[in-house]
Image 1: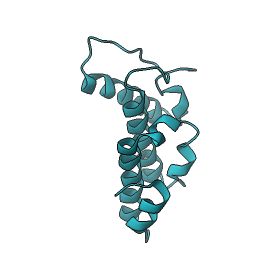
Image 2: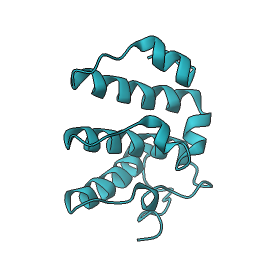
Image 3: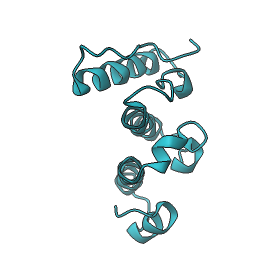
Length: 120
C-alpha cells in the first residue's frame, strides 16, 4: 500500500475519522509489520497532524509491546508537521515517556522537556 487507506470524509466525525485511520493501521500491524508512512494521511489532509500523532503513538506502543527498540526521534522525518505542533509533540513525547517507564527504564521528564520542548 503506498498511501493512507482512508480518504478524508467530511461526513465522518473527527473521532470516527481518527478511529478509522487507527483501526486500519492496527489491522495491518496484526497481520505483520506495516510501514507507518503508508497509513499516514496526506499532509494536506485537514486532520493530518492529529492523525499522524496518534498513529505514531500507536506505533510506539506496538513496538514496545514486542520489545522492539523505539525512539520518538525516529518519526520526525515521517511526520514533521506533528513535531511542529506543540500539542501533538507533547502527546507523542508523553507516550514514549510512559512506555519507557512501564518497561522499567530510568527516564526523566526533564529529558523529554529538553528534547521536545514540552511538559510531559
